[in-house]
Image 1 (cartoon, rainbow, N blue to C red):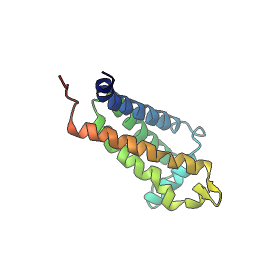
Image 2: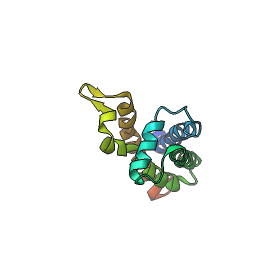
Image 3: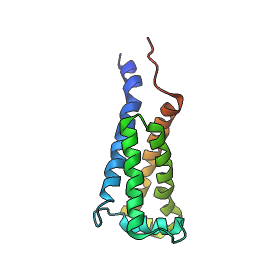
Length: 143
């Protein structure tokens, strides 16, 4: 019985939880001065777009991507679209490891920003699990 419950509900619960996390991360970026990652987001967009996108536009675009991805995952109807949006977001989220290692790591270990970026490895793993279900279609009843 427990096995059947876990098989039926664990991945949908993970999908909703992942969506909620991204809605929460995305919404704060709509409000200047609220996200502790503002300068890192702006700098990352600047590098990835060769200086074309930066400043407040970078924050708004990131907020839109993260919030839309989260809402798509929560709804379940647009989960595949949400996963594509997350894949795009993960490129930006992990880019600072390559572009700004000095801001993320010290000789003593990761900074607070570094820890914030590194925890995304868990979110990526969660997204892969959700993608494995979304790409094969709805779960079938084992009856």
